[in-house]
Every structure is written in C-alpha cells, then in structure tokens.
Amino acid sequence: MPLNEGNSAQTIEITGTTRAKVPGAMFDNNSFRCLGSEIMHDGKVASGRDVCMALDPDGDRRFAAFTTDEGKVTRKELGGTGKYDGMVTSNQTVEMMPTTPIVVPGTVQGCNHQTGTYKLK
Image (cartoon, rainbow, N blue to C red; front, top):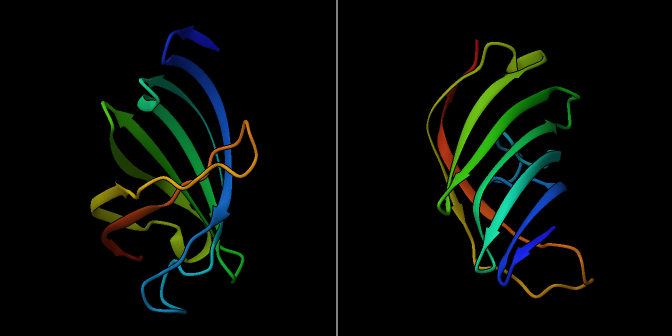
C-alpha cells in the first residue's frame, strides 16, 4: 500500500532455510515461515512485526517474534515443541546483511545473521 513517495505499508510472508556456522549444529538446516507487516520509509523497513515458525530436521518446531524499530531488529522466542519446549534464550541479536538484487519484481530477497545463547530444558 503506497503511502507517499518512498513510503509504504505491506504485509509479508517469508519462507526460507536457516544455516549454522557449523554444518549439523543446532538450528542448522531448518525450514521457516514468517508472517508479518512492515512500514517502509525511504525504501527501508522503518517498523515491523513478524512471527515465525521454524521446523528442524527432527520435526521439532520453534516459534519466534521479530520486531523492527527504526531499522533495528530484535528477536524474542515464543516457545516450541519437542526439544525446544521450555528453551530459554538470551543476548539475541539480528544483523541484516546487505540486500541482493531482486530476481522477480514484487518479491523480496534477504539474509540476516542471528546470534545469542540458548539453554534447553
């Protein structure tokens, strides 16, 4: 929804995969789906809220919320199933990586680097 020049509001659905620094480590090779809404200002996300579900190779799920405020992204774990039930996280950071060219008009491509600590039940 265009608001004025360079500004818009949108709903989004994002799907993709996660990769860990060490292949086979925790959170490696998970598939995910996110739903949310964002407000764009001068072509960048000014604010937004996304809720995501990730599915790992064992079939266990994680749920997280991402909040964007003035370009800074924060993450909060909302729960999970299987090994992620009762997981506690801390020091969560999300660093957005440089954008890549758009392959199909009307779609978005991106990558981010997430860090933090976790403790399973």
